[in-house]
Length: 456
Ligand code: HEC
Ligand SMILES: [Cu+2]
Image 1 (cartoon, rainbow, N blue to C red):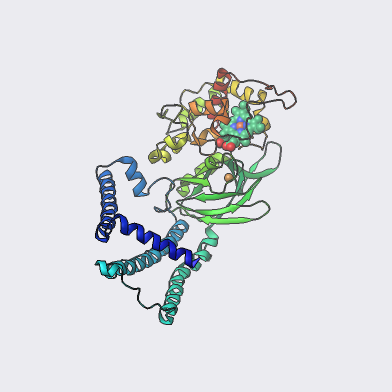
Image 2 (tube, rainbow, N blue to C red; image 1 turned 90 degrees about the vertical axis):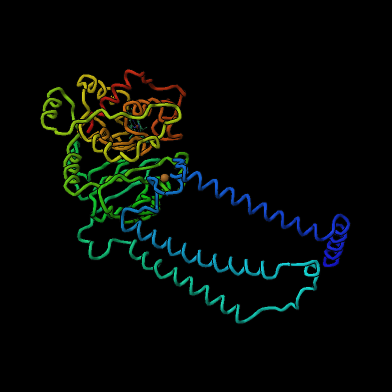
């Protein structure tokens, strides 16, 4: 082997000797380096130009301020996680700079400056330098300790609500389903139409009071999911037969994006949710309304409500519906909180007849078998609770905005938006014959949408 290598290097040496003198060989290398240097400089210049000229997309990437930013945090738990991250960044940056500087120094100091240098005998070789080796071990350990101290401190902090705030904390249960989230408020019992009481249930939009620590008990009905609200806290897995929990607190009222962070099947990437933090007073108002049974939009009710309500649902302009703007990413994020608030009030121009027709169809087309509309007909538990679905800003687990057009499209073909989801598999199909059990035409869907949007 050694022999072969020797032969190879001799051959190689011979080859370079034959084709070109060393000086040219050297300048060629130097020239290549300059080229690399120049193109990096060019790329860097281009990039900064892009940023300076205000290319919106580029700025969005570099200012790290998206709705799922873990850099611009909005609560103490996410902040603690961010702080640990930054300590790690600083320590590794320090290592990078020191090692890089030593490397650069060696490269320049000991570079071959002449033909003789290039062919000089290697200096005497030695093995090991106890001082350097022990020094590096000590330095590495010291740096790891620098990272370990805040890490351990924050593991304790993020594990559970701090002692001092525990009395003030509230509990919710979050249950992962393929591919949506169910939320339960165990301290808020509501009367069930079938008799008795059960915790208040909502789906996909977790509403909490701002400034209050929230302990989220994480469960799953099927596979492993993971609960993550980038700006507030995360991620903790929802594991079958294992009781996990996390806590978070939103510093101020706002609208926060959540996301399943553990691969859980076809539509995992679009298994989202929202957290809406309200001022304590607004939260109580919201809670009172949620605890009521489903709203019935009769002509008399609409008249009465329109007299009572100061804020009426202004039919907000939604982005155009096109094949490529199917996801709620097109939702104007900056104004999401405002949109959500508007959704809480009944829509203008409701038609009691259409709503009633929708309610009838909701039963006739078997929607009730999978969805609960507390106080109305639905009792199913396979899908999200729809008692107040009209007041949510998103549907299909944070994927589509809850507009008339989107709701229509969702009911028409849920699989188009969320492959493999449990609502339809190519329409309601009789497994024996493979034929659809029933169809829904556009007029019927319009009635269903009117009904669902009346559920505020
Ligand atoms: C076989 C059970 C099943 C039936 C029947 C069913 N759904 Fe669903 N539905 C689901 C599931 C599961 C989801 C959650 C899908 C997801 O986000 O992954 C869902 C989601 C929804 C949502 C979105 C809710 C939200 O907050 O995200 C609406 C609205 C809805 N269904 C309406 C209907 C209507 C209207 C019908 C009747 C035409 C119907 N569903 C029939 C299972 C069902
Ligand atoms: Cu998931």
